[in-house]
Each structure stands twice: as structure tokens, then as C-alpha cells.
Image (cartoon, rainbow, N blue to C red; front, top):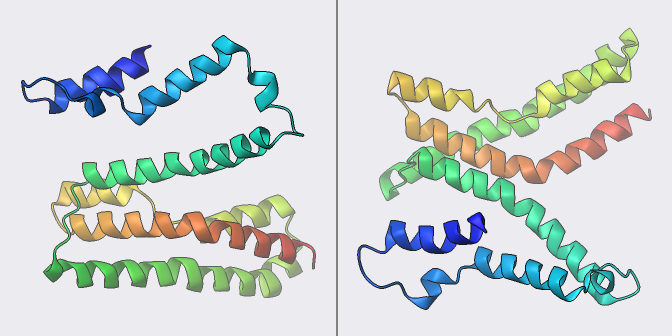
Length: 189
């Protein structure tokens, strides 16, 4: 019950400013979700929800898949809030250009270099699949998050670094499955 209290009463205490809470401030989506989960257990309908022949199972699996995507998005949003990314009309184009340039190198040039390296260097050298996998990962992951710490400590380019990391991690969630397919296809050659 700590989580419902945190998301209802805690939300009110942080945002209430001394006034009586409104109902929508106390009944939040996490609170409703926890109550729904408790109701499923209390009324013993788990069997119905887990029966593959019924549509409930497929709806639950779909919602679970969507839910798996929300945690990384929440972490990215939280990181943007903590990083205090400030985007204005004046700075937006510069930030977007920087993020686009880094993304082009990180998600196009380096993967292309990996493919060429695989075909002309790694495969002829007879490296093991594990060794090739390590090289693949090194050339396909987004920039390191510790760049934000470096930029903050230096007091320079914090917005550029934070926005670029935010953008590249968002792009990475969509391009990684494509890269994995390319990697598996290359390993079959």
C-alpha cells in the first residue's frame, strides 16, 4: 500500500499547496491500477485472464508490451527533467542540428562501418560470434550518458549534451531491432 499512498497522498502533499485535495488528485492512474490488480486477486479471476482461448489474455499481453515501453520513456523524461533541458525557439534549431549530426554518425556511419568491417576484416580473421557481438555492441549503442556529468562539471554545453542524449536514446529504441536483424543476417553469411 506504500505505492498508492505515494502516488495519491504524496502527490497531494507535493502539489497541494495547503488546499483541500481534489478527487482527481487523490485517484491517480497508479492508484486505480493497483486497486484493479487487488480486485483481480480478491475475486479470483486470474484463470479467466490467463486463458489463451479468451480475448482477455491477448489484451493483457498487449497491455504488458505497451507497459514495457513506458518504463524507458519515463526514465528518459525523468532524465530530461533532472537535466533541466531548456529548449527555446532560438536554441531549438541548434540543439536539433547537434542531435541530428550525432545520430547520423552513431546510427548510420558507425553501423555502416561495422558492416564493412565485418565483411572485409572480422569475418576473414575468423573471429568467434561472441567477439563479433562485442564489436557490434560497441559500434551500435548510443553515446555514453556520463557525457552529461562531464558537461555539467565543466559548466559547458549542458543543454546540447542533454538534448543529444535524449534524442539518441529515443532513436535507439526504434533502430536497435533493425540492427539486431542486420547482425543476425550477417552472422548467417
